[in-house]
Each structure stands twice: as structure tokens, then as C-alpha cells.
Image (cartoon, rainbow, N blue to C red; front, side, top):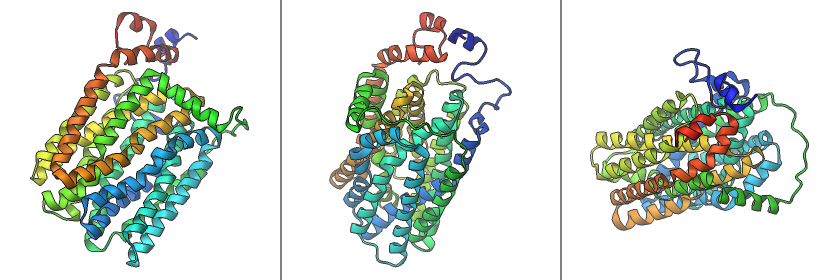
Length: 447
């Protein structure tokens, strides 16, 4: 059956039955394995967000130093920058479920160690740094493994973009709930209970992975060495314009934009004159904006139009940061965080969906490792930069400079849309996402 025939019959990749106004929105949950993942991750991610907030507040409580906030962020993320390309090769060579069970088990041990040290009042900055590095090493393998495993949980590739959007919705519900719970727990006790809750929550996702029914993995020995596969992955990413351009933009956003999170305790305590609950409100506002964005993506029926969304979302992210830097009032700061969260998540989901749609299956682990490197691996340098800038010019001016950089990046991406679409067309045509008539007659419609 040709792509054109598939398109007419509604069988193209990304096509969705119109069986009701909202029936398409949660179609990825038809797949049992993805339902298990959704359930396990929904619990675990709440604990993860509690730990993120608790770690930031613990460091700030112990040191009152924006520079050390940036340093701890650097320690937790630099392993991803260093190890992600190698991790991508590993993901493409071994069973991804086994890898994820190991990474989740090690992450549970790390959280429980943090909990024990904090609850026993033994925790110090060197120990926080060491455990942050450990978590960074785990994430280097976990993130590309989890992204690459998505296609295994959703057998029908037409549902892949919906699974990515649902996963993002799940992350942002956790982003909304986790910081609020963390703020309340810290206010009435201390950060250790957040770490303990996180450690226990990993049981849910490990159980969901073990309960999945997956086809027997084919025993295929890699025909080339890991070094050769590493080189092959770099060549593929560097020479394919759509993937290369998306990764460059989000490396910039990760370097200049995302480290605003590291400075949140400073805004909560010094700019808005609040405490842990204020930090929870700000992070909750980011979560609400991100959740709204992810739900909007869930409602999409296919991947067409996403390339235009990326620079628009990046600009919204930048505008939100600039306005946040100008605000000294809690309600206005929360409003700007809604916009920031919406733009941040819209660009993230759109880019992830495009990458997962375009990438060759045999290269999936390596491409998603570079995706991890761009999104997370650049963040440690951004954390250090944000901490140093905040120390020199103040947190408010720092996030304003970050916002301007995000807007400049979005304009650069927009100027390259024509070349991006040209590279995407053959793949979208082969998948049946774009019929031949639209390629000839509707310039740019497939993007």
C-alpha cells in the first residue's frame, strides 16, 4: 500500500481515528505496557520533584549562596554532558528494559542515602555534591534509555507522539504536586522526608517495568565496535539538518534559559521575601503552565506543524523569563512562571516528537543521548553561569539576560525553517504523514 493510499484511509503515521472529539487524546494508553509505565512513573516523578526542590532548599539553607546552588546543579548535570554519547551507544547495544531497571534501582539507593544523611543531621555540602554526581551518572544512561524505550511500549508508531505528550503531561502533574508537597514537608519537618518519599516511590516504576510483556529481544551482536558506533552517531546527528538544528537551539536554551530553576530559592527568599512555601508556589506555577502546554499537545492529532511551534515556544519562554526578572510581586511572578512553563514545555515536547519521528530505529539510542546532552548536559554550564551572574549582577538581571538569549535563539531557528523542512520531507512522505500533493503544492505544510 502506498503512502498516498494510507493517507486516504487514515492509516498514515500520525493519523488518528476521528471517533469522537477527545477520543484521540489518550490513545497511547490503549497499549498495556505504556499504561504500566504511566502508572509507575506518575508515582515516582512526584518523589523526583520533591527531591529537586528539597535539594535546592537544603543547599540554600546550609550556605545562603547562589554560587553554591549553581555548583550543586553543575555537579548533578556535568556527568550527562560527559557520558551521554557513550550512554547512547550502550542503549543501542543492550536490552533497554534491563538498563532501566538498573538505573531506577540505583537512583532509589541514591535518594535513600540522601534521606538517611539528612534525617540523621549528618548531611554536608561535599556529601550533597557527591550524591548529585552519582545521580548525574545514573541520569546519563537513564534518560536516553527511557526515551528510546518509548517506542517499545507503544507498538503503533502512529501513537508515539501522543505517548510523548502524555508522558510530558505526567511529568508536569508531578511538577505541580511534588514541589507543593515538598514545601509543606520542609515547612513542618525537614528536607530528609522528601528524599525518603522519593526513594520509596521508585518501587512503583521498577515494578511497572518488570510487569511489562515485551517480545523476546533478538540476540544480535553489534557488528562494529563501540568507538565506531560512537562516531556513526555523531556523523548522523551532525549531518542531518533537522536534528542538528533542533539540538543546537535546545542546547542554547539549556545553557541560558533553564538554569533559572537553580535561582528559584533566591527569588523566593530575597526577591519575594518568602520561604519554602513561596518556592513551592513558584514551582507549582511553572508546573501549571507546563501541564497546560502538555495537555494542548495531547490534543494534537499528528506531528504536522510542530517545527513552527518550536521557535514560537522558545520566544514565549524568553518573554516569560524577562517578565519574571522584572517582577517583585508574588502573584505577578507566578503569572510569568505560567508563561515560562508553557513555552518551555511546548518547545520540549515538539522537539522530542519530531526527533522520535525522524530518527532511524538503529540510531535511536544515540540520537536520544545527544538530545539528553543538549537538554540536560548543557545545563551544568548554565547552572554555573547563572550562579556566577547572579552573584555579580543579581538574580533578577540574570534571568532577564537569559530571556533575551532565548529569544535570539528562536529567531535563529526561524531563519532555518526552510532547510529543516527540506530535510524532513522525504521521511514524512515515506511515513505517510505528508501526502505528495502537499509536498508539491503546500510549501512548508508538513513542518
